[in-house]
Image (tube, rainbow, N blue to C red):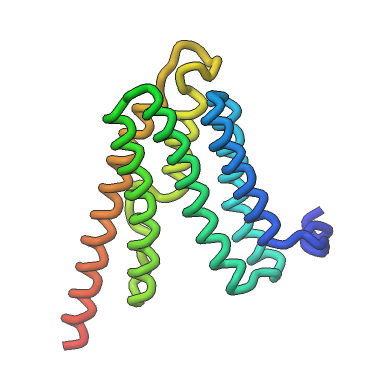
Length: 191
């Protein structure tokens, strides 16, 4: 089965674009207040985002542009879903949750940016609590157990966004501190 998949015409970019389409669908479902379905679409789309890189390495079909496209789409997908969540909270006049959603979006982008910038400086930087898989799990739980998601009388979307915002900002600060220490250590060793 694995060899047939590798020999197929399937490309890592097709997997990336499928994940993107599913995350756009999740955002639309959030706007329509179908939170459980949005959570499922977000989960499956996010799984596709993890598979594209693995498939790229396994099949040898990866390209530098594909790696760039994958990273770019990952950021856009998370942003699109969080924009839909912020819009939902705005319609409910929940300013604190809107602000937390914006902080979660910015924090998530900065978690990725700090890693990319650190690696451009030659410092591997995968440290921190709120890696992409952790952020996906938190937001997925919030969507699947949102008010009106038909899974009992839960309202976990706002708490999930608060946790996501806090952890993303904390992880960004962790990475800044880590890179600072690593660069100081490198300077001290070269002196």
